[in-house]
Length: 65
Image (cartoon, rainbow, N blue to C red; front, side, top):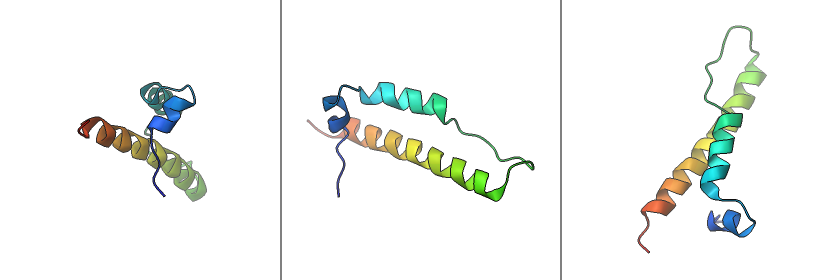
């Protein structure tokens, strides 16, 4: 299944503004000794989605029109 980021714009959100919000909400963090393995894995999963969206935006911006 392919996801088009242009679909996000259709629903009234600019993809770059959304990415900026996601980066602020789910910033890259380093695990610390107080965190459980579940917390580390959960935050890593959140961040991996943000990075995937950023990569898709970059790919979309580099496609020929």
